[in-house]
Image (cartoon, rainbow, N blue to C red; front, top):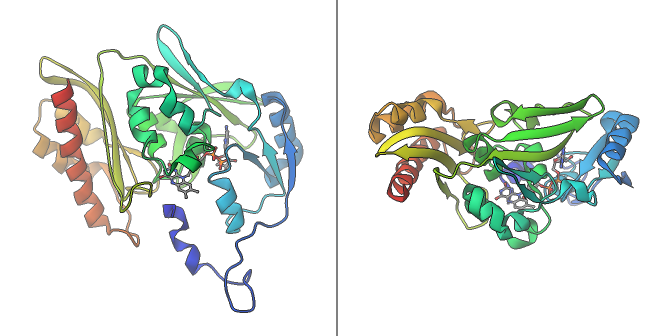
Length: 304
Ligand SMILES: Cc1cc2nc3c(=O)[nH]c(=O)nc-3n(C[C@H](O)[C@H](O)[C@H](O)COP(=O)(O)OP(=O)(O)OC[C@H]3O[C@@H](n4cnc5c(N)ncnc54)[C@H](O)[C@@H]3O)c2cc1C
């Protein structure tokens, strides 16, 4: 079960039947299919706050069914071909927002130029969900337990967004602003993710979950470079450790400054404020974050 649904059983049962069982059915909504990005903005502008974009539906539809969200209208962007696919240019890789998780896993370009995404996407849910869910939907949803937001932090990705006010580029470190909150303006659409090609880099990824396919209790996506045995660059993107994906800048700074792994693990307490929930306490998460740091850094050092 997705981490954000853990509390669903505790929700008020006013929507339930006479036995008090909760009804798992969305409130009524209208539906319209957008034919282009500009059409989607126009529809967003026309319907205002009552509208929601629908991409793969793998987060939105469960939220509707549990009545955690009740939009008046869904604007389906899933058939806008211009938002799909991977393009490699001499300096960067551009991934359309509608590129599905399964397409990322199968992409030789992603395997060659952004292998961290392959590692992470393989841990996102199950094949059925990966065959519909999109990278743009995952990033726009900004679930703190999701793998891909942390990957974009580790990869220092740029997020391309477009709206009636024009196009802009948001650095991944500025995109995730809070729990399920992003820097997207109400009428903007995330159109693509761009990652610099960094041939001499190494990546590492690990997460701890109760079962394969579950959301992680704690996870770490890392990307960096090592020259002559010394870290020259390192970004540590943690997930499931608070209200949003988080860069552990203190811990990374210890390693790029020539400090030890033990010192870096200790520095994590300045980077992370993990939450308590039914799966783990804050202290357990802080401990697991240190465990993952040791594993991932050791893996990256041996691969460099
Ligand atoms: C059983 C289950 C298990 C799961 N396990 C995991 C997991 O382990 N890890 C994980 O990361 N995720 C997991 N998920 C969630 C899911 O994989 C992703 O969150 C999902 O793929 C999001 O993409 P989507 O295209 O389905 O987005 P949708 O559900 O269509 O949309 C999600 C949100 O993003 C907005 N949105 C979508 N596209 C755009 C866009 N281009 N621009 C602006 N806003 C947009 C929508 O309006 C909506 O608010 C799980 C889901 C389920 C049902």
